[in-house]
Length: 242
Length: 114
Image 1 (spheres, rainbow over the protein chains, first blue to last red):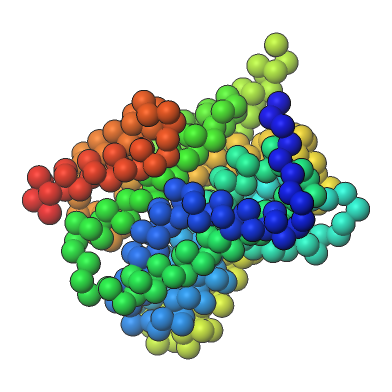
Image 2 (image 1 turned 30 degrees about the horizontal axis):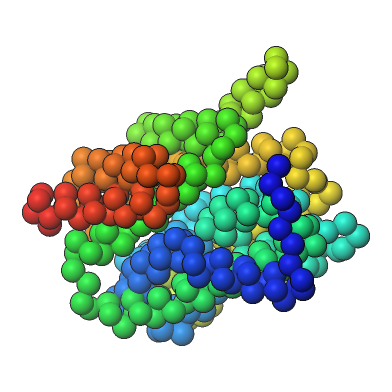
């Protein structure tokens, strides 16, 4: 058991969250990813303010890539909304796994609205890694600081990409797009200490592409339900036999 | 008719970006009511979230869009595998893993003529 990390004040916990965001590898990865998204937004003819607003209110890299490239590519409104909502399903189980770590006894749900909106892969991975070793009363402030720290990085580098757009060579643009899957893969693996998480990761990597290959609809949702439930079942059975 | 001509950009942002995305977060907020971090449904949710993430990762590498699609499949897969191996070999470092994967991708993309 690690010693519990505490802070003197709520502000100190918030500041520690911001610092953690800015010194984390995710800040670098996110910079690259948002340079790519900014360039896409520029090429789709959207404004710099629109780009920044989308980072703040949507706050999900894959959904922003889908929305911006679909708008640029002339998709219908229904197609864009459907693609975005399918990509966003992952947020539901992430919020369910995160909020019980943050919730304080005797407080209402209101203070959980911000972390709910802030839930995204980078923030989720870092929160699940760092919050359990932290005093409960400081987790909310830390988590909000972490998220706002990430959001500032994403907004600023989105603008960098927006104004650099024309000059991005193809090889470099491809390398920026590769940052998201590679950093998600390695950070999820780093967090997967329990057998449950390792199995879910491994099964998801196999079942996901298999469902796409066999053209099963809603492949991402089925991947989560099948691979997640199988991993959970194995975890329960092993627990029962131990 | 395309989305860009149907709606103003900001209406589009709310209707096609914010709402379809945020709804899942709000469902999560409602479902998390009364659950504690040790409860079984939270564990199951963590497994489902991890598996969904794994599926998204695999899709982004195997079936990418944009400029990444121009790189050969073999280069993308080998780069991801090298990054993962570097992560395991170098003190489970995220930075080392991402850096090695990116270097292999860029060198591989360059050698294959991109």
